[in-house]
Image 1: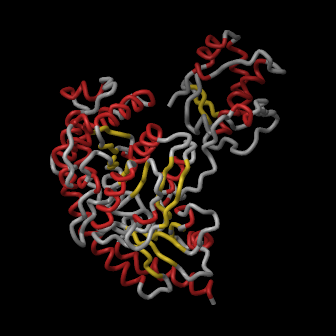
Image 2: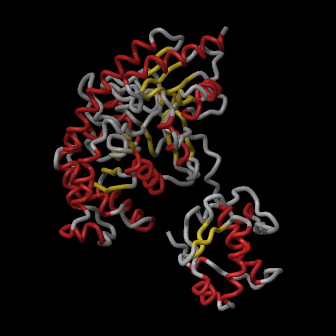
Length: 489
């Protein structure tokens, strides 16, 4: 690969000769990793012309860099980054990094860092026992079928879906499938005007909060609950109340009397995975009508129903348009897809559509069309069926392995799901446990990020079976059990 001469700029304030400045530019780029071993440098003629300096100056600089083994010269070919170039510091060349004089504490008006979120390791696949949630298993994802759909979406006949600015619109084929197939499976009937595609469920929840919340608004959410939602809520100045969930999800009798918006995950509560019974669902809707508040239903993993059929969505029981439904393909397809959707009354979706347009206009058209093809051609249903069968078997194996450990199952979905919510003995800190286990190749998710309070119990954890093969589950659980037993002795 050739390095373009337009990546070189001379600094008029540089203290030194032009030759030494070119040396520093090249050496700094090599040390920082911008120029990689084997890449070809611009010819001395091209670089001299670009910088408006003498060619001999460039040649001398290159030769000095060859002497220091930053570059190698090939006859009749040119100069290349040396395969044995230094990787630590430059001999005889001073490198200085500019220090910012900006007082960022003064200029940053809203702080978004510092949230208590679940850690996601980028190299999780390199660990032999990854009990982590929400990642795609390459053995279960139908890559060849996705590739065919993507190829078709990139074809000449699909030029508009690939290149057009949808503005406030969504891909009509994706919206049609959601309206005619996905939502009816949850008992929901909706028109296209009541559906909005989002960049995943997280984006959908942020749009909801941006429209509905603000100073003085009163909000209730589940505890423990989805950390991403809690992180969103802290930015809107609302009065937020955490409601402790039990073995049946959110108790209606704990819902505050003066509420504006209620966030809940009735089908597969995060992280306990428990399923809210129908009686509670009807009671929440009754309270919403009587007290005049809205309900935001985050409904994910309903596809993973291998124990029994999932309970109808809260939205399907809604008779006066008070429920805003959040769905996602990122969990069942793959998290990197970042494709979800909102379903609600037209006045709300109209505002959500305008807000999305102001932020990002629309999710990429080719991604929407590829997903629409994958869904419409039956690949999605076939993949989900395979996932259900595999997850059912993995769940049996994990349940049997967990029965031999000091861990207690504190929550599991009645229809299936992909994880267990577990409680360790009181003296066990699962944060420290996770750190210790990582050294032995075992990844677990400590439970404390899911709790609203900082002084919450530290002995909970979530173990998923979606990203680990069945054969590795017993040994991974055995290593986990051994660590717990050693820590309580």
